Image 1 (cartoon, rainbow, N blue to C red):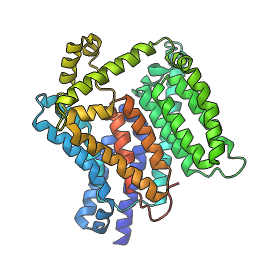
Image 2: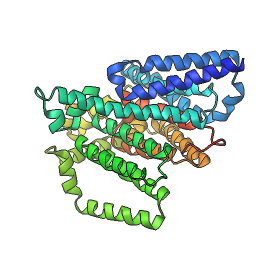
Image 3: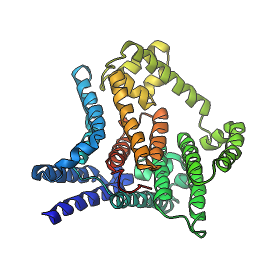
Image 4: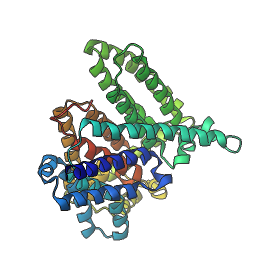
Length: 394
């Protein structure tokens, strides 16, 4: 019986590792929901056999994800655009499925976590190599992926550059966290990798990921070196960046209008805020957010917003607008429990995750896209499931 129980757990870990490996390829491989279904199936088998009942109460933080999904589902009762709202809920289904299945799993050991994370890092590395390979093979017919980067490069994976950069930055955080860099010959590897990552983000022309990379770098420096040295390094990097911020943005944009883009975002956020003021508690419903925004764009003369069907481009406003204050609080509660888990486990990885996802959520409505939902739900439940009173995660 013990052997059968261990086999189920190891199969679950292996499936999750493969899920992480294929997550960067999710839009072109289309097997991630199948893998998630198998994870859920094994969890149901576990529940039926009542082998891990004693572990369920130890991961009550996972209920925060279930509550968040429940709020989205409940909003279908008062949304007028039911079909559109149904699509949003279905796209968010991994949040519920991961949380429910993880509730029934055994706690993850350090070995389990490292296996899953290493597969994810390998998957991200392979996705970069794959994109470059496709770009070089097709260079004669289409040189733009190599010469211009941006969406031209990530088109091979059907990936938005900002989300691709998010995946890669967090993979770098894992790479730095779970491997041993104590020997003198290895200390230069993460530094060289960081500079390559910086060049890659510039190549993708992603502005929000630059902020994310700087933020996680500050945390890494505070962890690895003395605070005085860390702050000195940050000042040397940050102060020149502040003086030449416009030049940096123009370098990234390569001709795209930064000023217009920022003006658009402020107009969008202002419109969303006006709607929220009239729908504070429950929001307008997950199906009606775009209709409400389009009406507000019309009232303020923002024709571009109507033509382009701009969403909130901010997950906090998107959630507040769609499902009200109760939805926003349920989302923030997930962040709180991950933060708490980081303190309990004395691990920096939950903090890296929070920095990555919370900053991108400020600039984009992350949870209305498949890549965003997968990333958020997958790592949120894994980090919450870790047994903090065993070994450190990092």
